[in-house]
Length: 250
Image (cartoon, rainbow, N blue to C red; front, side, top):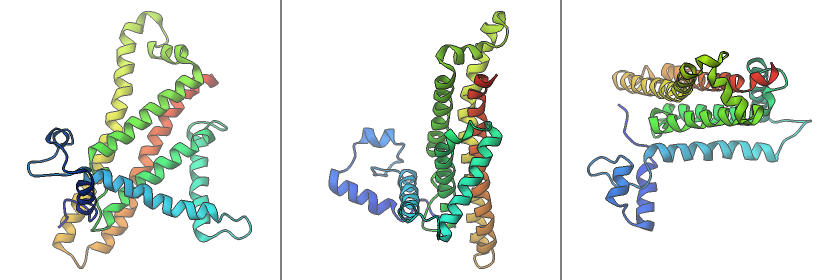
């Protein structure tokens, strides 16, 4: 069966406690610690930081050895991913508009997929099976597309869209639009959290029941599920960005 924390949880927190002392009870209560738990960083934060380190460890060496004449297999794979994301952005947001958002969408896709795929390793924990991580991602996407909309259209023009096409319906439309936009945070966060938690729980159960038969098929399904959940998150984010910038083109 699965374990509650990753192999880095205790060493990292023991190191932090030795350096800074034990955290206060107020801090532990704020972090949602259970009775008897003493930590500076919860496991999902450590795993999210590890995901950043893993991505950097792969991408930085590739960047330093970029080659047009003889690209490495890893470089070709990354170029294929970027090409696919670039085409997807043009299809969803609009030709010539989507490329400006490639760094943000690409970072989201790679980070979420890396976090999700931690589920395949017994000694790690996927940070996306914790709502704190998924809400942080959904809030980031929410802030980003609203800022993009304001920058593209101007604050007054962007907010005017909340009033709807008819002025006298504004008192009704504005609260509906505000609730609709805020619901996107909930939708993005809970969809990712629920699916990853479900996959993680199911994998643990099946591996516990059939330890020598299930792992390899479950790993294949885990990779596919991790990819699908990252894809759904960025597709919805791109749709929200498109909704924020499309009025400029009308």
